[in-house]
Amino acid sequence: MIFLNVLDTVVGVRVAGRSREDIEEVMQDTWNWPWINGPVDTHDVTISASIRGQDLWPTEVTVVARDIESLLRRLTTHITESAKEAQAGRLTMLRASAVANKRTGDTIAFVGGTGTGKTTLALSLGHSYGYVTDDTVAIRSDNTVVPFGKPLSIQHEFGTLPTGELPVDIVSPTAFWLETPPDNLNIRAVVLLDRQEGYTGAPYLTEVETLAGILEMSSEVSYLTELRQPLHRMASIVEQSGGIKRLTYRSAHDVMPLVAELIGAPQ
Amino acid sequence: MIVRRRYFHDEIVGEDGAALVLVGGTLTHVEQIGVCVLALADDWIAETEIAERLVDQFGEDPADARENTRSYCATLVKGGLLEVKEPTITAGGTRAQSVQSE
Image (cartoon, rainbow over all chains, first blue to last red; front, side, top):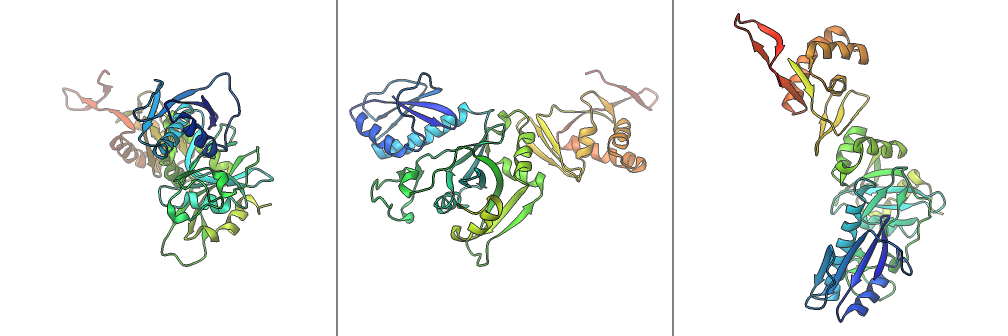
């Protein structure tokens, strides 16, 4: 069984069937960021995976697909969602990407829905700052942040990988030569993304009124109502972040100076 | 009107008196009248007493508090944040202070 440390949750993936070794090898290449070497005593979730028509161990979550590529995509989703479900009520989980100052651990979360540029921002800034996640910013009750370097879903418009390997849609963050984040991540800035395709000016930040910002953020929080006093939790995160900001921009390449204002210049 | 607020999962109020209120799975932005929500007890309470609490706890002008409380409560009832007990009509046609049993 493969064990993954995902969002403070140990997920065991039991691969079966004739393609087991191939699947496990690719998983080790794509889930290498949070990989746990060797067996662990206990785990929280078990997922069974196999190519359709091959053997399968029955567990609470099973994933089958017609080929390895499809299986990896589905596994990424199931592993992520299973971990989120296991942490419901514990972690405040924003649908956001994030990078961090490698010296201080100060973390900036880019909150937004599909198409707002979360992944592009994290990949662009992750060459200078510590890459935290492209998907979920998970914040503990003490406002420390759990890094989540899941495999990335990359569309072809991103071009060829530096390694020239893994010509598939699911790739490890390590394939992009991103900076690893420090251990002491803590939330320091929350930014709502407003990406405007036709915008030609310089990117800028504006303050967002606290309650309006929390209301807007709430739609991007997984399992919000499972949290104890969820609004107080979000208010605590906002307070530590010095308020909510909105980033109006077009290209991820232009925002570095604004990020430096919020979490310091990269080391 | 005699009201009580529904069970709130959580609530926060801004400096301008607006509030975010989570009732069940629904998050509602209550503009300008968040202080009224926070002034309410979980027990049934007359709107006249709410007005007094707004004066005591939030320093509202007494005349404003009395005038505004009725419309505040009506809005909150409409928004599903308050439950209401309608006063009964006595045989003599006057509104009684007693309310229907739960």
